[in-house]
Amino acid sequence: MKVIGGISSQALACRVANSLRCPIPACEFKSFPDGELYVRVVGDIKGEDVVIVQSIVKDRDLICLLQLIEAVEEEAEHISVVIPYLGYARQDKRFKSGEAISARAIARSISIKGVVDDIYVVNLHSRSILRYFEVPAKEIDVSPLIGDYIASKGVEPVIIGPDKGAMELSRSIASSHNFEYDVLEKRRISGEEVEIKPKELSVEGRNVVIVDDIISTGGTISEAASILKAQGAKDIYVACIHGVFAQNSIIRLYSSGIEEIVATDTIESAFSKISIAGEIAKNLLSKGRGL
Ligand code: R5P
Image (cartoon, rainbow, N blue to C red; front, top):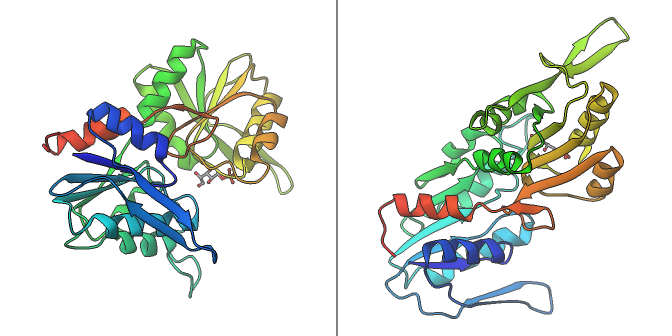
């Protein structure tokens, strides 16, 4: 087996290769004068099971992934594609007529039948997106790793999701360490007044970890942090699977009184303190393919 690291997942691909104790062939990435991307896989992959690891954060990352698949398709025996972060996944249905379902467009473009054998994606925004892939696709849930990281800090927290969509994630992060968990709920008190607070738990005097699948602009989390602070929460920490951290999100998050931000390495940043490499390796090995 050989692991190829795309432009956006270099460090994670190396960690996966280390976990699998397999080589990582060299690749060249450069831009032509007009900005187009040039991709070359330099190492030998003839007859190999090839695993391409590449997150789709920016548009160019998809172009890179498609070129990597193309570069290895004639020589590789088997091609697995690991997409730690699948961008464009939040538009997973047609909300208004005429809109593109971006999640389906991206999933279809990678599902090259007869070339790509299987696809692994990490904590999809919605599991229903799996049906858009046209080759076998599996979701890897890395949320227990966040629970482990929180437990290692010894802060005895309550886990809070910022909205009801985060309930499953909160439960999954909390469950293996028996943390209490809840989500924020909006309740209309009167025509003019809306109250937002945890559905069941009180956060007064307690350390809180706000968890979400994606942090992009930081708006969702900073609003949640302000609400929880106002309700007497002690220290507030933030953990997410996919740290997109767009625009001024970091400043926005810290200004809302957050102590620490932590993310996995599905997107590489200074906050990627939790590596999912071991989980990816485990899933690749469970397919029964040797090294
Ligand atoms: C939304 O459904 C997601 O789960 C996240 O809450 C959202 O993507 C976060 O975005 P932002 O950081 O821009 O508020």
